[in-house]
Figure 1 (cartoon, one colour):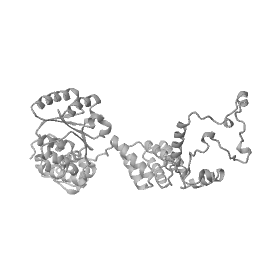
Figure 2 (tube, helix red, strand yellow):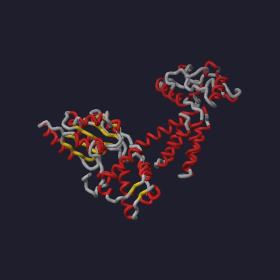
Figure 3 (cartoon, one colour):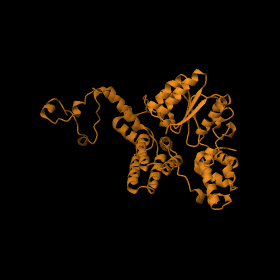
Figure 4 (spheres, rainbow, N blue to C red):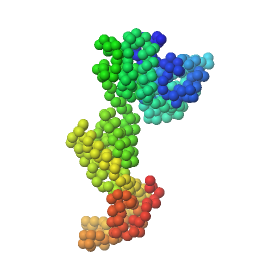
Length: 437
């Protein structure tokens, strides 16, 4: 039985005591996992444990404490700073002289600032300490590159619902306090807790404890899914900074991929997690020109209308407006010709910054300018049947192609119209330029 203080949360009282107790993360802690193999040999290497809350980072830290024969220190990036770190590094330097390893485990390592991380760098590099950091934030953004390059990043996954149920069943058996209540928790209640926990074992265990404690107060001998709600309430969806970018990326790529089901799924996930609907609307306005463009010019109008509706209507009703726009954009034909044209124009402008505007296109606003030839030879199209076939680019660029229409959606008609005006030699064929994608 676990001997941790009975007033500690259940998640602390039932932490794994050996490798076989740990549930989940089989890719690194399973039989052939890199962390398990290292711990079975009594060793560990400098690494960053990167994963969502409650996936087992701290539990792995405790197993490192048990299995590795080394001085072990556990700090929190939220509560400890440079002074505490320096004290441990000084102690580690002394222990190194006697051939004793030091493992420093820092929870929430992303909370250390650059100077605090710099303090660790040289001692990790010369082997004074083995650093194990735990973080819920992407190490690429939160850990300084020199330190990150000296640590192996271990990606940890959210626990599955089955794994959470397994963890809770173990807790009901091994925790003296909970097991002494003789309260039965039905499987459907465990599954419901797992579902609302979203891969977070700490939340699942502490929710289980709340349910059992409250069942005892209400003199209930059984916790089932029917009475679970009144015992514990529910948990709001978590939504981290990285989730913001991941879901936004998935949403846009689903729209671009013409999958309305996926687009709606990611959109609703974002909204239910508290994402600003104006951000979603802005992303759709951008996509309407970047990925649909002239294949369906209405797409931009639909996206802008949705953005205006968000401002006018607000949540929750504006979800309908966003959903309508998302379905339209997903179903619309896709063309990135506008995006490519802008990129070509930028590249050409950069290469031809000294090229001058042809004189006939310049406005002769003064007598001197008119005498210099400004505006000479310009023909007003409306006085010539609506179109004058002549080169409007500088002579140096007269063979340049910037906008290249595609054979997609309404852009077919645009291409046909431009070919009728300018001739097939200008708009015939597909884009063969080096920047097409």
